[in-house]
Image (tube, rainbow, N blue to C red; front, side, top):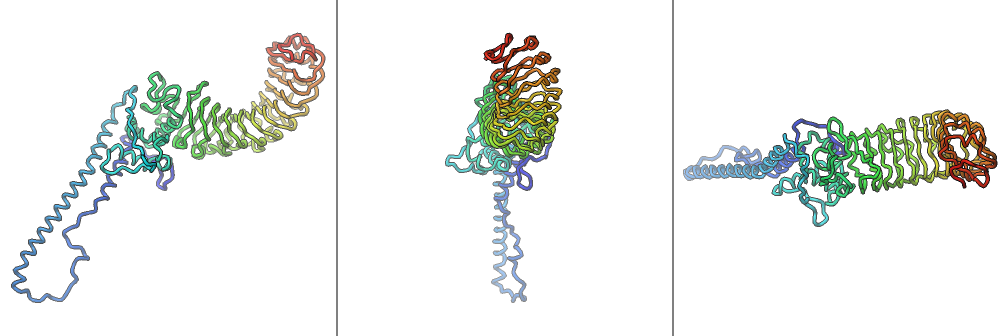
Length: 536
């Protein structure tokens, strides 16, 4: 049911108000038993056993006529024996099938209509585990019904999704999830669609894959959890899980700033969460790579926020290409490789934060495929080369954070095209030259941070054009010289002005000191500053 007619992995669309997800397993078991009993031989001769037509028989002797009643009596006894064999065979088949029918009726009656108690935790039982490393065998007809159901559940439902190898290991998250659903889960019988079963299997696999029994809160058995223990009752009631009206999982929202102690990797079975729109797991201990199957098959994801983990590897250029992706944050991980340029199909992506990773190479010229983007953060990576001209064609950009790389070249005059720009950070780099005059025409620029670069020249009086919006100006650790213009006193909204580690001379004017500055730094041995909050 979790595989299509063509054998490919996926989730079927069949639903039913009164559907029991294990009914198909029981029916399949009955079919398997039936084919092991071939039809009994009939007393009627077959076409092949009939004697071919011959010429008229010779006259029958008296002795032969006396033997005929004896042959008829023998034939009648044979027919009786055959009938008896058929009856015994039918009774044997009934004896094999009847326990599965009774077991099915027991599952049905236990699953409806009463809801399980909200505080009731499943009773743990030990799953059947291979002892010699070989794959778990499909149970035979004399085994317990739950064991038979587990074998069928794995073979028919889960192998098309997870493959066979993971079920050879009883410690794998997939095997643990299968055992729990088939033999321990008190809620499975209340599911009304195979899509819900797929969501439940994916979520339980996620629980075991991230060491759920050792989460900080709301693990199975956590009696202090008020937001919904995992694995108990409906998945929609679990901590940090959201669902739609159809009971399908739409979000994992582990957004606590201190995390929840999730340790492990994201399992490929997340591809079954076909209605998921938001995947948010921040400040935990996720390791490994992004699941490829999820990236290739998910079609509804709008936001994926995984910052503050320990993920690694490269990010496919077209990851989540089929989803209407709007927000991506993979900040503070250990990703490598180049900057992807087609995430979520690119056209709807508004926020891309890849800061504090180990991305390398240049900023790709195809970066302008993100035409709807308002925030781009590539800070604190190992990027090199110039800022591509194509970036300045992204006229929706409001925040551009490129600081903490090894970028070179100059700041292009095309920066004036970014009319919506509010924050520009290109410090801690090797960018050099002069600040282009076009920058002073940006009507919304509130923060400019070019510290730790190689700019030179004098600070322009044109900065006063930014007076309505500019609140933060950080130019320390460059090669600026001359005096600080008195006209800076017109920047009435300025809160932060950092000037130290340059070659300024003269003094800070009284008009600048009259500004409501929270931070004002300078090289007080080189320049007179009576109002600096910190001198260098």
